[in-house]
Image (cartoon, rainbow, N blue to C red; front, side):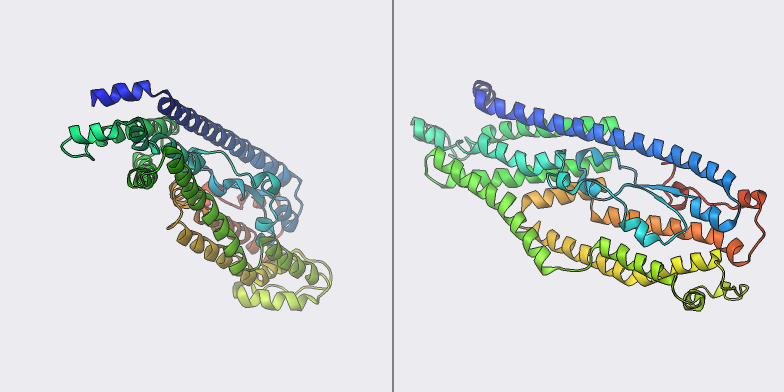
Length: 420
């Protein structure tokens, strides 16, 4: 082993590749930590500003409907303790929203997230390094393991001098693997220490990274040790395998999925809800109140309304708008889940897709996490509605004192998020 260590020390190209990997991994972790720190600060400022504005609006309220209309409530999707390693879909979906007692589907799907042109490039995070750059470093480190000895004329001598011809490669492979492991795991564990990442999550992420390294090492060594070709040819074949598994299959798979699984888009859900709400202004009040009372019979004994505007009619057709948009929203969700399920199938033949999905699942930045946040927003929105419906539909006389008694938990309490 000492001899192999000395040999590795003299191999400036291999050492340079490992140092490059260490630097790139470190940069990706640093960028991830900075992203998480900025997002946490933005959420903190967002929550404080939201509470301040809502308190001010309450001082200006003079009826129940106006108080509910002006009362925005902050909702947020806090980054997990592994988000720094895999940003995932947090760049594509909103992580902060201000909602109120109006129809919620439009509020969810009309929220702007990021510039779609910028989102196309993705974010340079640790998951990207492991999925795309690590295999290239593995190829560079191992492609000429055997070919270089053959081309220099030392291979026959090494084979004769060893009891088992394959055993001569084990120390060399192990030493290079240890160097690569240090280059990728040291930054990850440093980031985990800074973030206070749960040990079990950090170990799971490390095992996923090691599995990715093992797969690519096995592939490159199989090519390097089985083919009696020049090192340049082995390198070309290995890079070709990388192109197929890392680029061609995911790109072709994405194109196939988008063509095979079509369905309604989020903007269309918002449009359905908006049209239902807008159309209600031109309909008789009974056309709104009958379906509302059918789904909310507890308010069916509310006092009848005149032809004049009434807040309870306004909030009733907001609710009915959500009920009309429920089926399109469900279809949109099923479309996303179907595409995600097909992407999971592609992961079986593409290590790049597999490792990104694993890390995003551990970091809670995948599709499931985004849908969970949406469900939490809907649940919180329901609590807001229930807080105002009794005073609206029972036509309780308005007063600032009674308004102050209306209790709506903040989003962290309502969604069971602890102290975030």
